[in-house]
Image (cartoon, rainbow, N blue to C red):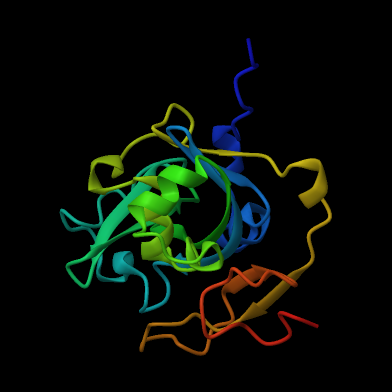
Length: 199
């Protein structure tokens, strides 16, 4: 019988959001039988206008302003469910958006969910990866320790991942902050690629 996968502890998320965003790159996200290595993240904090919690407490932002280690999953453009990991102490609105993953397990299921797109494009965007993982709005406000979505530590081959950074994409507010982080050399990152991705 296989050992249960290791899960990052709650304390991992109870830290500055920029630290968590960097440290999640290379970690393994799981939902059901599907999993992938996180290739790209973006940090959001209520101190800047691109963060949903910047406006304060609303029915939508209460998860963001709650305790760390919770999944914040919201609908983007009425179509895509986007996965975020809530960080920092209760009362601070901060989360890490998971932008891209490299699929690890349940590839056939991922291919079927994504409509048999090329493997290189299975999860190279925040809406694509949730579709590939079979993850929807039902995961909002759930524990990242107890599931259904969990993150595990970096596998040995990802322990020394080198990061590149750049400005966040798809936003118009606070667009100058270089709060986007990606694994150097990873072609499965969402486009446009951050500067220096391929060396």
